[in-house]
Length: 349
Ligand code: AHN
Ligand code: ZN
Image 1 (tube, rainbow, N blue to C red):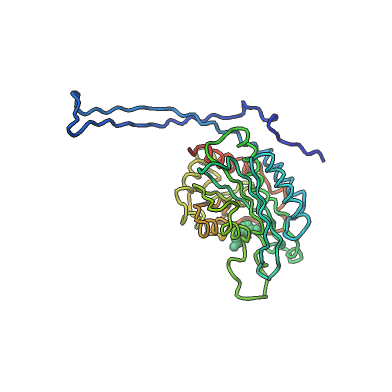
Image 2 (cartoon, rainbow, N blue to C red):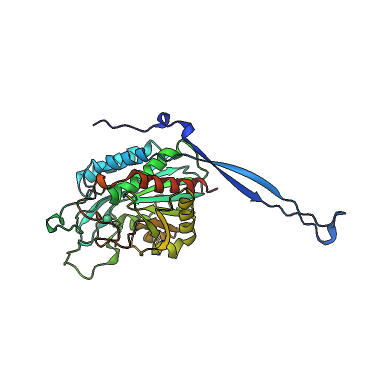
């Protein structure tokens, strides 16, 4: 199969959209006290226009990055497919950002299994102390335990949406930031071992620790890739590729980082993606951002779908089933999320 690469040269600079932001700087010159000028109090106002170049998020490129991960097969910890995909992600990030870290660690799963795990981090402008962290998990679930068909419930999940979609969007953002420089430093942080939570039918060791998911983010939040790591805020992307996905305000995001949630949703709506970004409350989800907030103390939101009327799952009918494959991935959704997140980070000064 021919695999096309999206490199610097193939993206023409004319595709860069320019968004004009008028920032009104009012300078109040007040003379007061004993230094009164002859004119008395005067008020001057100065208006400056700042042009911020935001690149065009290429949905075909993002889709391709999703497909490349899925081609490895399920990326379950302790399998060769998983390890090969880790190498692929490291190499891919090395092509886009200055510094790539690979954090290898042993995670202990709910049943005592030791998971050979790797968090993978790409740092853009690693020297800057003004940073934004972007997160996704790259591993996939060992069991399709939400599948309608009982015979499928021990099969692994391919994870086109649950895993690969968030990573695909972040790789496309990484490709863009090497082409057009954002002001802030950006970290692309790919967590491992998010989806090894207990099988729905698990009857062993009880009670189950509710922290049996998200093992990579728990590790990183305690041991970040650089000591004393700080970021202005963080955005987690989880399952951001399904057709007609709807993203509601997730509960922990609202609790820890309400203003970031509003900033991102407003940006999405302003860009024309109001069908995706819904300013209403969804559920509260135990996901990687919870640990980044609670342990690392970095205000982080989760962009995760919520379908209020879906009977199979509030995450959608393909969630943790054998049907989470490329046929469920929609370029328009990748674009909505990718362009929104990218515009948000380029606007930070
Ligand atoms: C729980 O179901 C507890 N959390 C969902 C986190 C998740 C799983 N995200 C993707 N797969
Ligand atoms: Zn999952």
